Image 1 (cartoon, rainbow, N blue to C red):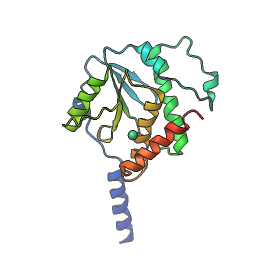
Image 2 (image 1 turned 60 degrees about the horizontal axis):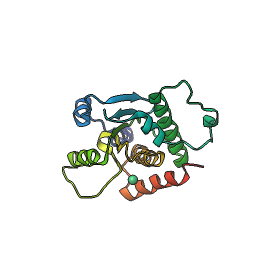
Image 3 (image 1 turned 30 degrees about the horizontal axis):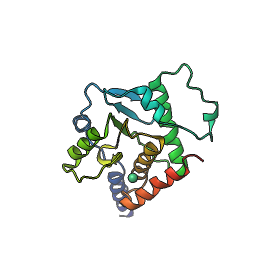
Image 4 (image 1 turned 45 degrees about the vertical axis):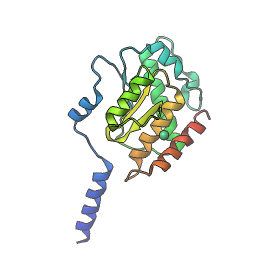
Length: 192
Ligand SMILES: [Zn+2]
């Protein structure tokens, strides 16, 4: 009897822990034909075809030196590779700040060229436009971070990474306010 209860308990936890969306749904929700795809260790990053990669790369500054970043040199590395490494570095930093290391997490990042494209994507996903301007957002259903070349920065990325981390760490989704607190905490300590 106890064994059965334990098994049921584990099964229920597993259900909450690993919500999976079939890839076909991902693909159609992504709608990224012609986009550049950058694979990093922790992310699959989709860049809108109009994006200037140099500009994008320059907008993401990684200023902390608490592991081996001090010895890092972008020399001889393509811009795409530099962007990928920055994302991975920021992710490790975000996890470290929260001391939360969820397993089985590989978020997608979708970077648009400008704010109006990002607004349209938001309206498409949530079937509504509430008039609020969001420079970035995270959608748990698709494990995807959305932002734009115009708005991206290390703080914006790290903030949204925080949402992805929190949403994959707890057995049930944390309340929005708790997720927001954790993300703001990351921004606050990003440069330490
Ligand atoms: Zn937030």
